[in-house]
Length: 74
Image (cartoon, rainbow, N blue to C red; front, side, top):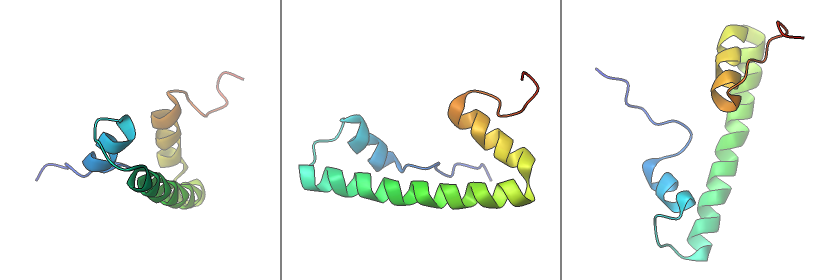
């Protein structure tokens, strides 16, 4: 079974946040609030990875920033 799970945003949230969907300001800000809540959960997940699986945390950081979080270049 292919892993077609979504990332942080649902396809509909992507449409709304990119401006592709015509929604009311109230609904738009509701989506923004929902995404902020998800970001808080990602922060909690990152703390868990920091404690228990630092290699996966490094992959997450690289995925988000496009940079390595390691000390090899310092």
